[in-house]
Image 1 (spheres, rainbow, N blue to C red):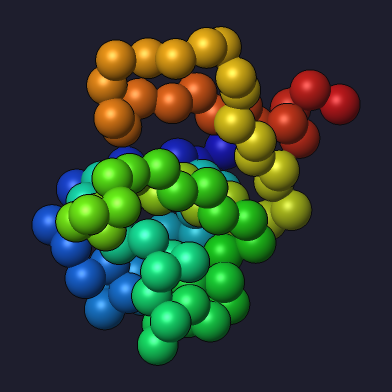
Image 2 (cartoon, rainbow, N blue to C red):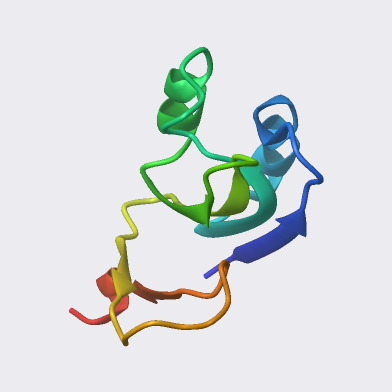
Length: 97
């Protein structure tokens, strides 16, 4: 299992190709733009990864993106409210089988 985490400092859509050579299973990107709010680039995100979870503050459209590859499944866990905007729990559900 290869997991990569990276603070890309924005414009991840222009940098995502740099990770392809590592063939990751999971990628966690800090300061990632919201794939669903990037109308011009939405297809770039969804063609690159199998599954995407994003959490952030809408005003600045930057947050944390979790991207799954190689038929890995990810899902958020609801353990209640946390006081931090970018804190959320993600489970790799393909490991639960």
